[in-house]
Image (cartoon, rainbow, N blue to C red; front, side, top):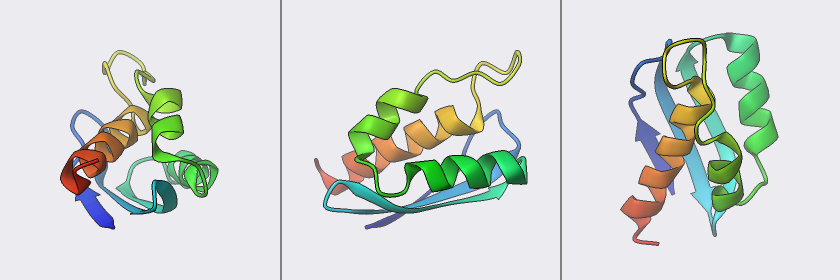
Amino acid sequence: MKHTYKPHGVCSRQITVDVEDGVIRKVEFVGGCMGNTTGVAKLCEGRKVEEVIELLRGTQCGIRGTSCPDQLSKALEETLQTAGV
C-alpha cells in the first residue's frame, strides 16, 4: 500500500511510504536534507512499521518540536490508520 503524507514543521514537503504486509518496502522524501532523509529511508526499508514508528517518534530537529524522522513516524501511523490496521 502506497501512502503520501504532507509533513508539518520541517524542510521536507512530502513523504511517500510503501508498506506491504506490515513491512516498509520503500520511503521517499521530497525536500529536506538529502543525505539525512536518504539515510533514514534506507534504514527503514525492510523493517516492521511499528518498530520504525517506535524508533523515530519524538525525534527533534533543533527547536522545531519535530523532525523529518518524527514526521515519517506520523506518516507511518497515518498509513496504518488508512489501512485499518
